[in-house]
Image (cartoon, rainbow, N blue to C red; front, side):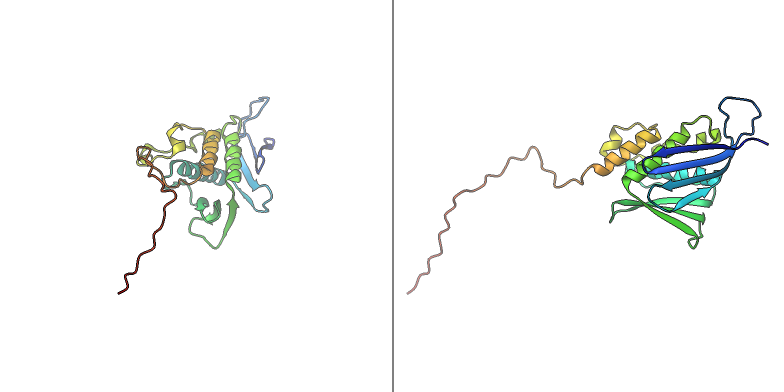
Length: 215
């Protein structure tokens, strides 16, 4: 029986732990984890732990990267998950300037779900841990095609300031940095026309009271 392999990816606000084994009998110094038995994802200082198998990991990567690209582009597009079990979705909480991550055992099963509110920093760290896994050639190489760049058909119309300087093949870490910068940009106020001449401001205007003509 293959020896159990454990891998852990850590950022300041997120810990991603994987357990599995290799189906390759070669005696390599660093074995490749090709079979996943359990994955756990926890946001630091939050008691909720999300866990599951390969489907969970694929859905987490797809949902988080897709949501972040949506934030970056400013355009809504449907994130397509391969499986409807271990269903994961994210949405904005604009009134709190936060993000709600929801896990459901099945897509339509709202009775059995877990929710985690994320700050933009926590979302960045979640992306960072996923990027660490994605970049690890010795862990689940079948996940290579899970994360895809934003399709060109979702990049039409208005383009955000950050996106104009961001290539479509942006990596997850770069995507996270661009996303957090996007959230730090203040909402624009009234834009003044640079060609408009300033209106003179009247100074020391003497107000003359009206004269009442009495017969």
